[in-house]
Image (tube, rainbow, N blue to C red; front, top):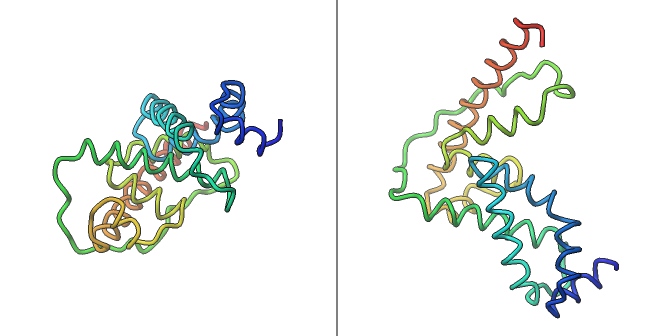
Length: 182
């Protein structure tokens, strides 16, 4: 079955097509969820919920643009919706404290991706979402503000603080591994 046949099968509620779609994309969409969710279990839940939405809304996909991109937007929107459901208050606007230097990773080729993902997951929820949307998905601060129902200034401030926290975590990680020879 090629992708068009799988999509057509899913539109007709074919369980074999749905299973095949899951087999092809579950890993990719799970890794995307990891960037937006605070834990492995939350990422699993987000991925599962996203697939349910994909199956229910697949008839809305008209074949224009990337099908994978269409699914990724569903995953990201689910993560944001989960965040919104949990948040009780909106962070007030605060002036941005701009990060003047990016974190230094001695050898980016050997820096463990799992460690970086874990560091991102440990960020406070709003910082993690803003960082992921801006740095990984290339959303503008205006788009992020609209999605998270915050101002552009708050988005910028949250990005700056997320970078500061990540810089600190990367430096601690690098120092620890340098001192312990790992």
